[in-house]
Image (cartoon, rainbow, N blue to C red; front, side, top):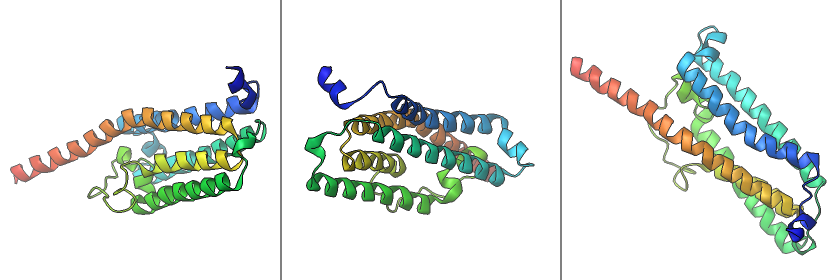
Length: 203
């Protein structure tokens, strides 16, 4: 434990705020999306326009992401550096995984569009078919894994063990979020398919 404390300063408030932000964001968007699905509160606030409601949530989530990243950057600056990581080969590796992580995130956003990226399914804005091209032919959740790699790349670049630990926490929070998101989203599309099948039978 003493060796861990030597490289992770748990007394720093910035580390606590960063961890809270990492945890808060997926909890927030899951609660907001489910409330929208069951009550249409954002659509109602947007005068009955689902796309406007989705864009509002998108701006909110994006803004929270920027705040999270700023808090993470501040937390890293306040943490001890591990000299064994402060070398050129590690920085090259860090730059590569950071770049790859951003490619996964940006390409998935491009493939899904704004409503596909920011929970449009919960607003009734459903995609016609499952996206199977890059990066979804590599992983089902490129945004989450890409974001985690970006966190890890930043931590390695600055040689901060606390950042590596925080990257692991980011991944854990995303995996927890997926336990709620994936079955719920699957059911949304299954419901649409059932309704389409019932409509065809009636015809």
